[in-house]
Image 1 (cartoon, helix red, strand yellow):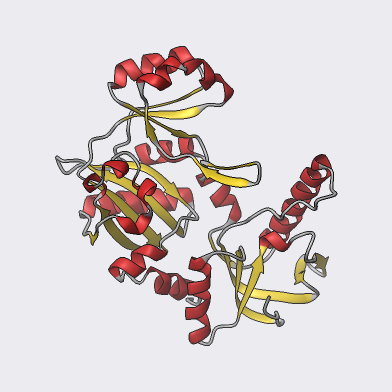
Image 2 (cartoon, rainbow, N blue to C red):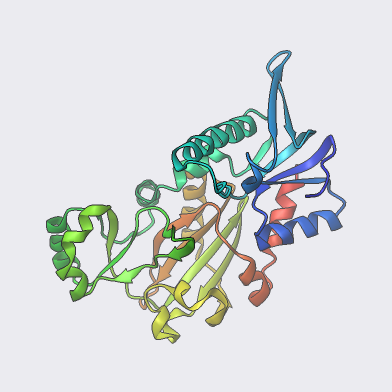
Length: 321
């Protein structure tokens, strides 16, 4: 890890392996900005953190023995450290929770501009909350059920006609040392025959929205970068375009209608987010339907394919006024 000096323009809270962070750090360095990068998986077993409260509620954040004083904090993402082999799982879980409380609490005690504030990220990651706010600002949303009740799910499916199912929060999980991802899927007869298994965890069930294209909107401090993802060209991507790999599908730049831009602006202001990746569907009739927003989403492949300049926009915001 690079040395951290006392005076920093930007503190980046991220992980060791994140290509988007790497690219923004490169741009900031080229512009002469002083950047500190805190890789969260190093804490607490491979690095140390201290937060000192002194004077009139002034705070000092120290990482690896060096002070971090940054005017802007980019809260990119957080990753848990690997469990020491000999550590009891219960003790590991306790250490993990205490570390996260100290890290986030210490960061939130700093006087800084945030992209995004951890509290706003935490709140916005709840998809039912997103849907409510989207509906309130006038964005169309799919008819939705969130449930682990097999009877309720069966009734919703009968009402929707065609139904998709997706995780209520994140589809990533670990099993026997391997990382897996659960994608959005069409509810099939096989699923319906096994609905008794749905009781183990609530999931999101929504009507299947017919698609012309998927739309990814990246929001950076009020700047909009919109791309059409031509997911219907690949049978594997018809329901969830991520199944093919982001860059495998045709993409094109997209101009959004002003009324939609106004509603997206209201959405992000209500969510308190300076950055977010918004997923929409454009139907064959031209209607835009909101699906969800990821406060820590990916965008680098869009810069590579379409030259949108999202990474530069993030850097602009971080060293802006």
